[in-house]
Amino acid sequence: MVLLAVLATIVLGAGDNGRVVTVPASAEVVLTLASNPSTGYRWSSTSGTVVSHRYVPPAHQIPGRGGKEVWRFRGPASGTATVSLVYARPSNAKDVARRFRVTLRVR
Image (cartoon, rainbow, N blue to C red; front, side, top):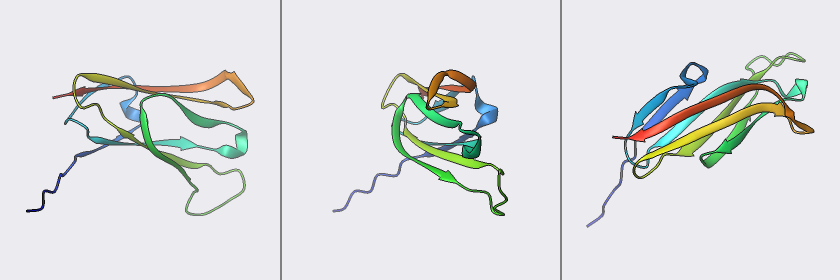
């Protein structure tokens, strides 16, 4: 007998900043945020269980045009967890241009 676990995938974006999102236990959370590495800024996770992270360039690459960063997090098995990121220059972590935070609450 083969058991197959199907985990839910929750898709979030910049509009979800500050929200409390109800998720199934251990759900995968995919967060997509605008990013432009040519400015020296990038998103860094400050809390949450990161599964993967990648930068996706724009479809039509024009110098200076931004793309997006796609983050995958594992949601909590129970209770709540916070996913937080900051958009800052790695050389000056205090120079934060934007913040993102969402609370995941298991239903």
